Image (cartoon, rainbow, N blue to C red):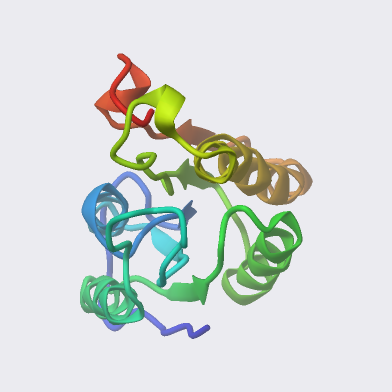
Length: 176
């Protein structure tokens, strides 16, 4: 977990704000983090940066999370980076508490970490595959918000909580 000081004046709607983005190593999470930094936010970025046994495709990697960290720093953002699994509520609390101590506040949360179930029909999923999907996609959002909300309330600044979904959140798909 690292921080950096911005090298140049920053502008945008998020100047002076800190945003947490889960699943930030690639895809939507990377995009959200870069957009927030471009608007002046400092960032807390997290990702599992590894594999999950019941997920049949590669997830974000430590190298990809490092790349996002570097890109955010190049935009002038202070960054707190953590490898953490959103399914681990205690680890999320520790991560957010550490990030707030490092960056001084938390104003926005983008709960983006998510997986697609195994490439199978719903009735063909194993109970373990089903539980993993629910634990990441639902419990992970809860554990992220649970870790963040007390800091946001204590700060008294209001804030934003955003839960992200792919198209899978709007219509049924195999494995989802």
